[in-house]
Image: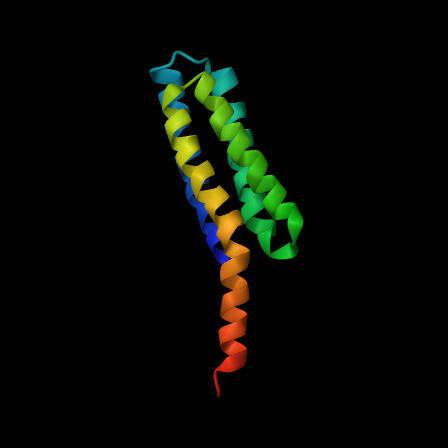
Amino acid sequence: MNRIAATILSVQTIVVLLAVPVAINIADVSRGAAWPAGGGIALLCVLGAATVRRGRVGYVLGTAAQVASIAAGVVVPAMLILGGIFALLWFVLLRIGPQIEREKAAREQRSPE
């Protein structure tokens, strides 16, 4: 589950950073606002990806990144869709990830080595 969470956040980092020029050129957001906002969301993603193996902190940072990505959709409407996709992936991971981990551990205990 940790690898999948880190992968989702890593890909989201790239998408968020690529959305900054879109915000500047298409949505007429000033560079002074777009880069710090996009950089802040990307930083949340990177920190979340780096800390998911260390416990709950990474998942809290990842959740904050999802909220921030959707909130960016107020300024750049395309981020509503992109942020929504990543938030959906994140929610599914948080919802079914622990169940899959339990089933995997049970299978490993049953299988003879």
